[in-house]
Image 1 (cartoon, rainbow, N blue to C red):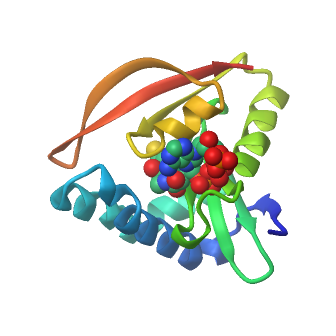
Image 2 (cartoon, helix red, strand yellow):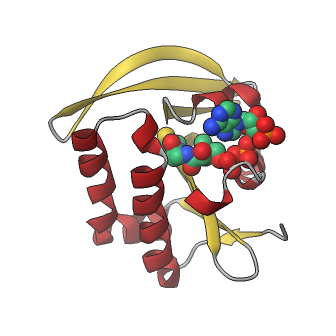
Amino acid sequence: MDLAIRQATEADLPEITALFRNTVTAVNTKHYNAKQIEIWASVANETSKWLERIAEHYFIVAENDTEIVGFAYLKNGYYLDGLFVHKDYLRQGVASALLRTIESQVMVEDFPEIRSDVSITALPFFENKYYEIVKKQKKNFKGMVFQNYIVKKTL
Ligand SMILES: CC(C)(COP(=O)(O)OP(=O)(O)OC[C@H]1O[C@@H](n2cnc3c(N)ncnc32)[C@H](O)[C@@H]1OP(=O)(O)O)[C@@H](O)C(=O)NCCC(=O)NCCS
């Protein structure tokens, strides 16, 4: 696949939120229950928060010739707060390309390590990228408990 990585703009908002909703619903559903997925997917509707993330964070998208096939963003310069790939383009290296760009940005900003809270679904991907588990945790989000993992990698 021919991929281009670029910074997100406000105009990408509908594609980003649709991708997020579809991926959570179709992919994360393997590891979280229906109520958890409903709550998680509803984050797609928080338009002002997404606009703020795009405006204030390092927020990148991966595009093929026709559409956005993945996105990722950093918070506080070193914390990967989101990494999502389009449900129809999994296992084609999209997340790998996004993560390479994200890690380069963290290094450019002179942070010694990158951290993230990652889903059960995403853990094998991060292990493949040599991230180590700091902690397995139960995170409270909108009244539901979600199991996930804090991971880190020295850069
Ligand atoms: C996790 C995620 C971002 C990976 O995206 P991807 O583009 O499919 O990942 P890549 O193709 O770059 O994968 C690189 C390698 O990671 C590993 N990997 C990725 N997904 C995997 C999976 N589901 N199971 C096992 N290993 C996996 C493999 O070693 C893979 O290489 P291979 O395909 O040659 O075997 C994607 O599955 C996703 O969006 N998941 C749902 C959203 C999510 O949970 N995001 C994290 C939020 S905390």
